[in-house]
Structures are given as structure tokens and as C-alpha cells.
Image (cartoon, rainbow, N blue to C red; front, side, top):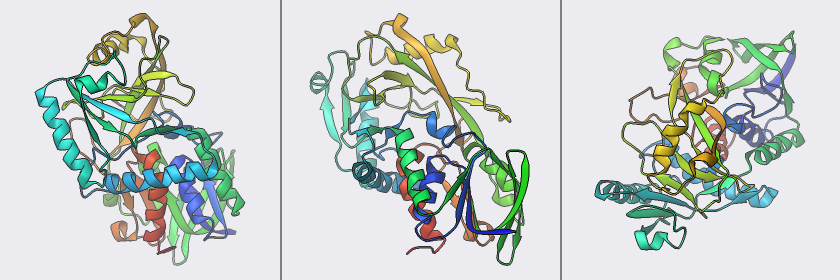
Length: 375
């Protein structure tokens, strides 16, 4: 039976970042994914935004790891020549109630270590676009966008250069705990394989709780309920009037940051995501219903009244693994090591949604420290 140091389940951006972090310190790591290629689910179906770290409450892992991860990610992009643009983000208020929210957000951001926010009057906003409708705004200069595919390619290359192996089309069947780690059963392209591993890292994203239920010796009480929340994106074929990312003040009755305007590295303007809780399934449904267009236009026209409706077209969708259900309050990342569940050498990552891309390098470092692989 083959022996390895670690098996990482899930080759999304976080699993790949963990592989890149651990591979210089562990001699034999296997990263598996059930899909044909890495990053085919959450990591390739998002806004590709490098978040500033403004919204998350203290003390939370999302607040800590987003701010730390943002700084590490920009440094990594510069070092590895990963395409990114530090565009900045405007958070728009439409009335006095929303302006009060921005004032509270300014305080929260400073507590999180984000001290670069700049208040913008309605007149100031005209420097960025004459198309924006708002009474005031906050500018977050450190928010940006990234080529997430190139980033994941680089993380995988780092891992493989350090001796790690990526195995696609591989399903996790189950694992049992032993005195020295785990006996792990895999299905690799229809053929079953059993191996021993000292460490087991569950970074399976949408399927993290399914994987956890297949680990013998892990108490079911330590496995949370995971909710799938679908978000849709529309692209805009008209003239792009924005030089910054544009976000509305989040509405109190939605789970997310609202339908915002973002750009990709090619300059394409897109709007989204909305939030729609869906039933979990064996195969994710990424279809996009064009009947959502009126809802999108209504939300967008609050801050971009001049949008040409006929040039807004369905683009793509993504699904986020949320620990918070509909109408529930904030839920933090869960990075559960032995102290959480009592199984030595096992780490379960639950609810790694936004800002998971931004925080990916910091998540990997946090995990490595928790496993005592580094100080």
C-alpha cells in the first residue's frame, strides 16, 4: 500500500494554495479532484475580485484572513507575474440611512486593519463616472481583480515543483483513522486505489460535508449543515462607464453584497451575483434563466440609471457553499483541526466561500500553523 504525507481533497484555489504551502515541507502530497481539471467549480465561477476586507465582523477568520490574504496575494501576483489590476471599489449610498451604514462600515474596516478608505461626495463620484447615481460613497483603493485561472496554474506549478502530484477524475470513497494517520480509498477514473496518509485535508468546497461523512472516526456532531447558494451574472455589451468596481450598500434582506458591477481582466463589464438558495445535488446546476433580467435591471438602475437594457445578457452562474442558511446571520469560515473534532491529522474546511479567493494564501498558512508544520 502506497504511503504519502498528505492527501488534499479538492483542487480549487484553496486546495491548491494549501498544496503550494505544504509541499516544501512535506515530501509526498497528492491533490485530488473529481473533475477533469483543477478549479472547475467555485474557483472558476465567481467575480475574481480581490476583496478589501471591509465587511466582516471581528473576531472572525474572514476578517483576519481576508486582510492578511489580500496583502499576500498582491505580493504573490507581482512575484509570479499573475495578471491583476488594483482598480479600487466604490460602495454607493443612495440616502441618509445608507450613508449611516457607510459610516459604520468605515469604523468596522479600521478595526479590521483596513485604513485606506476614502469618503466620496456625490460631486467626487463624477471624477470616476458621470453615470453613477449616489448621494455619497466609500472608495476602497486596495480592492482589485485577478486572473484566477493563471493564479491557480501558478499554485499548482509551485506544488508540482516541490514534488506534489495532482490527480484529476478522482473521487474520495472513504477513509478510516489509524494510529499513524489514515487509510484512504479512492476511485481514480473507475479504478479503486487504497493508500496510507499521515494527513488528510478536506477542501472539497461544495462537497466538504459529504466527504466528512465518509471519514470513519469523525463524530457526526462536528459536521455542520452546508447550504448551496446560487449566484447569476449578466454581461454588458454597451459602453463601460466605470473605471472602478461598483457595489451598492448591501440590502438587509439578502445574503451577499448585492448585484454589483465588476470587470474582468479583459475589460468586460458584468453584473452580479444575486443570491438564490437551491437544493444540493450530485451535479451542480449552472443554468442561467434569462427571466432574471428584469430583477437585475431594477437593481442596477438604482446606481446606473442609464444602462441600456437590451445590452444586458446572461453570462454564467456559480454556487457558493454557505454555512448560513436563508435569513440567517453571518457565518464564519470553519477550518476544523484536531481541537475541533478530535481526529489527529485531519483538517476539514467548511463554508469556504467569498472571500476565499482573496484569503487563499492566508488560509493555507493558518492551516499549516494549526497542523504544526510551521510556526
